[in-house]
Image 1: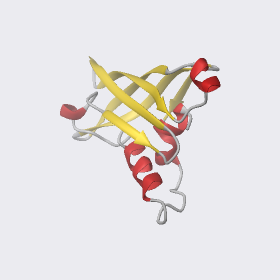
Image 2 (image 1 turned 90 degrees about the horizontal axis):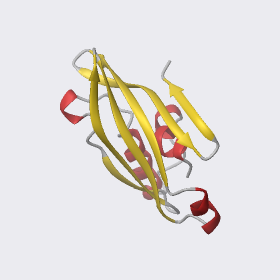
Image 3 (image 1 turned 45 degrees about the vertical axis):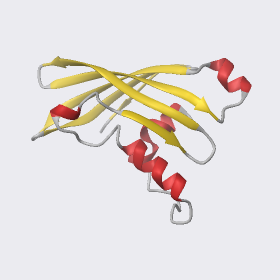
Length: 126
């Protein structure tokens, strides 16, 4: 499971056939937790363990910073188990930043910036 998959796949694609695989369904539900609209009190409080049936990762978010009507959170995607030795040599912890903007009475994830093995990447909600 790549960092991009862990953070965004559940929010941008229809779920695969998860009816026969509750582990994968649960992983997709947890992935969505980082992208769902949240009340201000829940921003930057995610501490999510994800197991997709093969790999285990942990996503933690903290460091709430306000700027006008938006907030930024610092996060870490951490490889826990199920990764090859080669994958672990490439990295275990991958920092990211999530930017939320106010939408009514909640905040929506608008931008996700990450430092990955292949360089920096940004995902922007359209």
